Length: 334
Ligand SMILES: C[S@@+](CC[C@H](N)C(=O)[O-])C[C@H]1O[C@@H](n2cnc3c(N)ncnc32)[C@H](O)[C@@H]1O
Image (tube, rainbow, N blue to C red):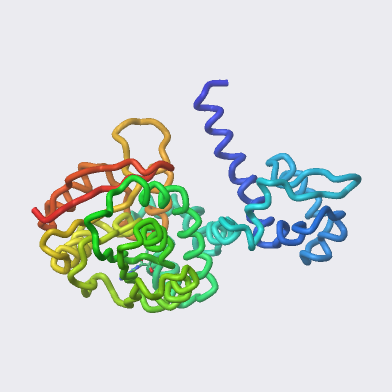
């Protein structure tokens, strides 16, 4: 079998494995196994599941190394499976639940329809993702947890590899729960931060930043980045923001940042930058999700980010690899 056939059948099997993972996350299997092994019947009782069906899912989860046999018809949680516990420090339970959420699932299943029409089937059915989330507090919580979990690896890279020594204040534009801002502030004790996001997200950010002990060094401002962003800071971070928008909208956001920033300010765009080659890449996978969920959202190459800056009176100065496929693109006023 050729390499490309392997990839093809792996992608097909990936759907079954993801469905088993989603079932584990939704039913709280990891939480129910947290205190030791359990028989399938006991576990089904705790999870509110049909035991014969759960047994088949447990077999798939065993093959994925998420649970392991612990006697006849008994299973125990593995270290890998423990990241699905709700109380794990970098729990991915919410992320998996978000990716399997009704709208996200619908979006990926309807990618062919999106590609036929050029209009997101998700957007036609559910509206803009952020309006969809604003009306659904539980889904919004899952989304913000998902953003935090996916950022863990590259956020550490940002705090370590970017020199914030000249920065007094950073505005995290559309910063979600404030997880990236918190990491930067912890690593740079002299800095202050402003978390900017939509009202319903800002509320959660206030709580998270207070829980991090950062309430005194950090302001939370609610607003719409198409109307404007908080003025006068040295650094404006836009992490996983521009890829949600088409070029004209991305330029509107960047121009608002350009207007608001201090004269010697810097813009930091944290995104997965598309390579020019034909090899598999996280950015190409992520681009399928952007295409499916939003009208206009797109992953971009370095040149395409440079072109957005050019249209916004900014110029690209540096690109730093942060690990986990993410890059930090720095720009200054042109
Ligand atoms: C993909 S998330 C990125 C969150 C965070 N920066 C991160 O990297 O984890 C995009 C963020 O944009 C925010 N957002 C969407 N539309 C917005 C708007 N019009 N004004 C301000 N924030 C907005 C969302 O609430 C969400 O937190």
